[in-house]
Amino acid sequence: DSGVTQTPKHLITATGQRVTLRCSPRSGDLSVYWYQQSLDQGLQFLIQYYNGEERAKGNILERFSAQQFPDLHSELNLSSLELGDSALYFCASSLQAGPYEQYFGPGTRLTVT
Amino acid sequence: AQSVAQPEDQVNVAEGNPLTVKCTYSVSGNPYLFWYVQYPNRGLQFLLKYITGDNLVKGSYGFEAEFNKSQTSFHLKKPSALVSDSALYFCAVTTGGGSYIPTFGRGTSLIVHP
Image (cartoon, rainbow over all chains, first blue to last red; front, side):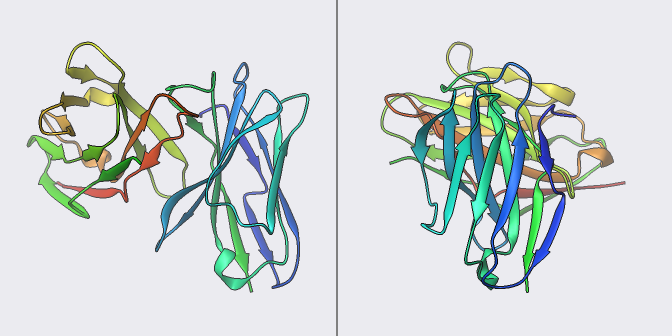
């Protein structure tokens, strides 16, 4: 158990809908990362938050947004969903925003129908 | 820009034999290198990292990796493979001067045969 929790585990929704994925980092970790994993694209970095502030952006679509709350949990919002958004979404956390190992949650499997 | 290549999609090895999973990288500046393992329906799990110092890094579950600067490689090794080592292995690289966001390789599926 990595200490990172993600909810829900599975999500099935229709095209055009909006969903929210939730992540709680390991106790003491200040940095949270979101990744998308799919068979064709591999593991793609979406966005990083550090102590409540956005730190880095990767290949995140404009339809996606995220935030980190004062208690350090984070939410990833996906809107106007398309079939191609079906993937595994992982949250990871690390102690600081540096060359630290990341601890990954179990992921949320999103299926868009 | 930084990049990672895992040249083998799949590695097959017999239980008890040594295993190697290959990784090469490209960065501007000093690399920070990581190996992660992913079991089916699970998140990635940290195995080991190279930041600085000894080129041979030891990690979890008997795995080790050798940093080779001249060959820009960071191959993962284990002297004696177990069936339970069968999983997907990811190499990742990052470098300083920014946000330290790692770039992950495409992954190598390790299959250990009994």
